[in-house]
Image (cartoon, rainbow, N blue to C red):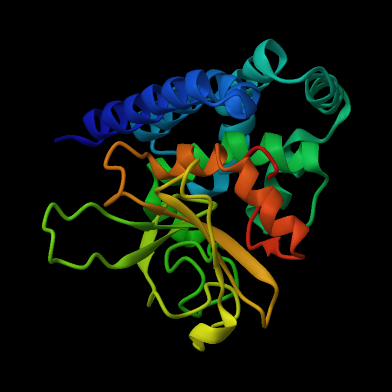
Amino acid sequence: MTLVADAVATYGERRERARDLGARLDFAEQPLRLYLALVDAQERAFEHALSSQAAADDLVAFVVRDALPGIMEATVAAGPERLAEAALLRFHEGDLEGIVEAWLAGEEQSGTDTFLARASASPVLEALPDLAATLRLGDTDDRHCPRCGGLPQLAVFADTGETLLTSQRKLVCSRCANEWVLSRMTCASCGETSGAKMPILSDVDLFPHLRIDACEMCRRYLITVDRRKDPRAVPMVDELAALPLDLVAAERGYTKIARNLMGF
């Protein structure tokens, strides 16, 4: 299968899952409605990045020119009013190349700037892994993406199709969507390995295939998606719908390792 065909399948799965979860989960309807608008723009950016093979020295300009306008259009059309207004203000008055460049460099930004830069640049990094590798952030341990150095967004256990075959835990990068293996008994934030200090929180009635993996040492957590329990799950989308679990974690004083695209 070609990269373009893979992209069509990947974005199609994300789109279908977002529609399904948005229709079933009232609390997730608004963020997934925005995501459905964004995913169309991101798919176009992904495909254009593949066809143009943007170079590192043109990346920021490429994102601003070819990806950001579609993200802006989707945000204004489907985003909450406050976000739409803030995004429009930044689009017309902000340093757009500076916003994208700062995100690529891993700098702290406002919520609006992070949203615009991430929504626009991440599909380009996903499409061009070799380019993502040239933008690698400084961290090199196994709790950061081995491709671009980004923080993990979530963890996933794949559906092996074999009852007795144990799936490896993979982390998914919050920047370029790369996946890599990390021991299931290791905190994805600080590296703690004592199971007694890594509580698991869940709501099996609402989300039988999702859970919080937290750490008492660093007070961080991420969402784990177990596709063995729901093979239909699309980890990137299901994590967006896990707001009730994020609220549980926040109530107990944990902070997510990396907020997702919607800021949860």
